[in-house]
Length: 154
Figure (cartoon, rainbow, N blue to C red):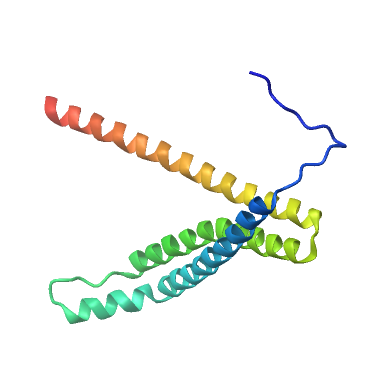
């Protein structure tokens, strides 16, 4: 199979159809990034008020024990760390969409290149995060099998 390579001085042009697809993709990416920022805002608000929420739930029911300061601090830390991890791919997606929209308005190739760099960063972050979770799930699976085998033989 023969592979086509592009020389430095050759230009690759996008058809009108491909440009239309990119414009539409930029609009949807912008929409998704705005929703992502709103979700991050909700996570931060939840992290700040998790102690109050669990105290109110504990006072409403006799069966639910209210959480202590250590547990609410841990929950707040977890929600804040999730918000921090979630921020980066959402930021990269926002940068991709806003730069791509500006690039089409001003017909600027440098902005197109910059926007694709942010898209690459977005998918790179998501790919690494997915790989980390696959490894964690694999370790949990192996640990569960090990604990089950130990329980079986005891």
